[in-house]
Image (cartoon, rainbow, N blue to C red; front, side):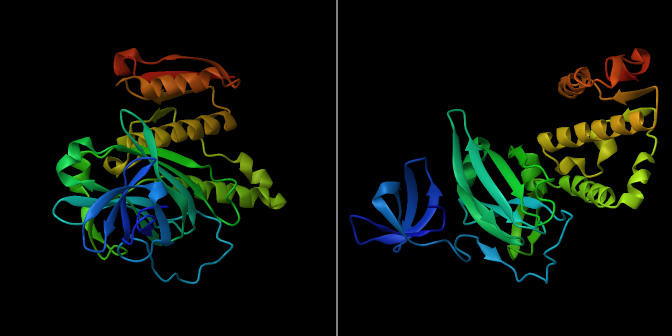
Length: 315
């Protein structure tokens, strides 16, 4: 039972469409005369599942897709489209080149509630919830979990989890026309930075399955001796990333450069992470403390970076 399903009241003649999930026991239904009423889930029965414009579920005709696709392209997006002068409809849009399994939760001070879960095909979208525009400041945090169903490498692409906090600056800056919605919406990517990692997995898998090229895996490119992990140095479009995506990109770069340095026989490498609230620094130090390939690590070049850089001595 989800937003957009057509339902009928068990103890009445009325029927309508689910437009909002109130909590684990209650939903809001818009009946045929236009009135909206709260109803207990046990008091309704589903007539038909959500389809079409009302629910936001719509699939574009797909191009002939090669079922042996191995690289992960596109992205999954969150969109907010005005439903009327009082409400915005929250939509999940899958522009990946594969179906996804998803779960979406809304997080408040009191609890975390599952809004919807299921499978969303490539180039499809669905309506998640409907929120009052006048209550923008109290819109809840959204938590998304994705599993990517690529035929050949689905086990190698890890499940993805992130939190989306709806901030006014980002919300109003990202209004644009969307082809699937056929109209304007406030839209941004949820998992945009996974594209690079998936391609690297594909390339590595191909090379490992080709004995003739396995020897070339040792030919790593030597990284620079100082690696700047500030997000503006790693991604020109960093303003569109969530805090969790920023951290993911920074730690992924750290791991990649560290592996390259070790493979190339470097004696040491310095990571510039900044100070801030020490979240990135603490995460890097935690990973280094568990890595047996590391001799020691310490704060580096305090005259330049203060406590914002770490020197890693390699064994």
